Image (tube, rainbow, N blue to C red; front, side):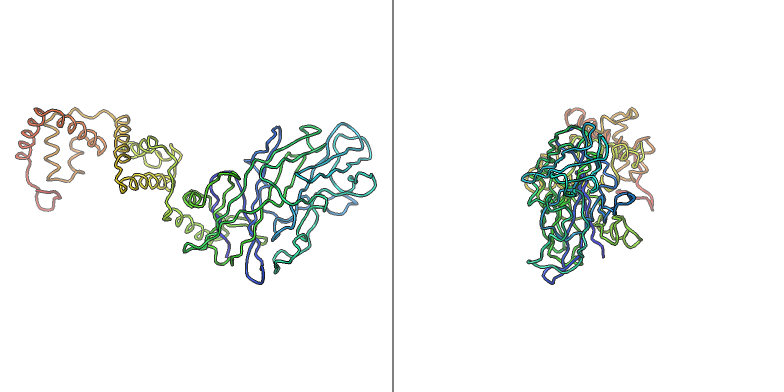
Length: 468
């Protein structure tokens, strides 16, 4: 069974899993991937249109070159763990026209210089082995991904050497990648001979939910940095081993958060109802979308379980904004779907907004604080008044007659006779009630008019609803 992923709102991150055994027990590795751009800025930013680069991937071969052994442009994401962090380069070295460039990539303590050599002067030289040398000018060099031959689905233990899953050449492996690390590029970017690019201090958080309040919070480390010097793109891959049988996992909640001060577990659970639901990619099923009706039902169940979860949800609108939309929905003019669409809500997302605000108001009331409920009522009434269409002129006697009729007859029959909608009646009732409460003389007139109206109103006949 595939693992459901609830990806929280925020920077886009894709998810894959590698099933294996750890110390003879069933376990899995969660793999997370994000794409950055660094075209003109000192700090890389999350790519909003990552395309193929953002997908969990198997080995991707480079375009074939006659007379050259096939190389990889990207190494498979399906590794259970790595002993070191890989730093990988693809694309071209760049600089003034020459047939020999000294290029380098740096990250923390890693400093990797090399030569890019061409047969004739050029401003770009491919970062493929036939064009690369170590600084001695003789020894062949490689800066892109190597093929990994080890089986990622095997059985591993504490003493296993996970360096067999490193795809970078040994000189491009490092111990740790800090979330705000600076990458140094020399002759590897169109932005200049020397570039310093700071990572945006983001880190994934993963909650592995096994149901019945059982779960594990995972903070995977970054173990792969793949840099495309032609497209000014950086792919970051994080990987963490989860010592849980994957068949026990009900869902994974994932988010790409600020490395310092991001959402805690409670906030992640409360954000889950608004998540994007898909399946984790696996080596034999790369597409995260549902593949058949059973999988569609599985995602639907996961989404509705999140919608109704006891953790609750936080509203996104201010109280004013919520009251305004709620008032508009209460009006009889536009269709409900039209109103929700105009405010960028679906039925599900509006349900969450209602639930969030009702939870806040109810929680406050249960604690003895009625102010939020009163405040909301005032804002709702104000929003209704702003939306109000002109209502028919209604005298005090007319108002009393309507009240008397509604005491013995169904509201749905009374209001149409007086050309009133329910929202219009609510406003009318509120205005007359306020006026009557504020003026004793008017209150006395009203009681007299109501008595006369009750006397003139016939009792309901058999089959009619009402209170005699």
